[in-house]
Image 1 (spheres, rainbow, N blue to C red):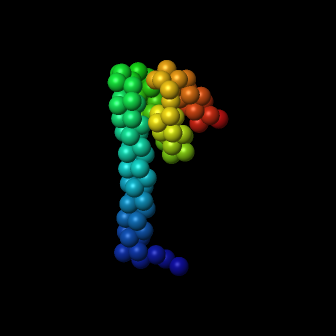
Image 2: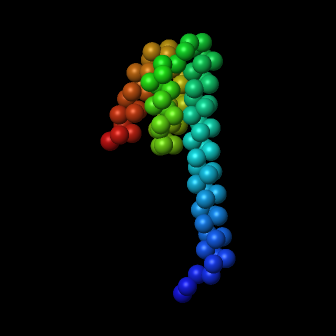
Length: 91
């Protein structure tokens, strides 16, 4: 069955909306992770770490990073765990 132009446009809008929601969730989580680190440790976050967080597209990995940011005893400890989480993401 051939989809009408109106139905096709509606489907594209719906898919675009869902994709926008997912991007928004990732951006929000990235911002939250970096904000938690800044507030907890009152230090500049290494540029490489910021870049890696901002490049991550895996919500589960970012969720793990958030958990680590909230519970890490130090920024150095977080950075070590973060490297491990990024390695897991690449597998």
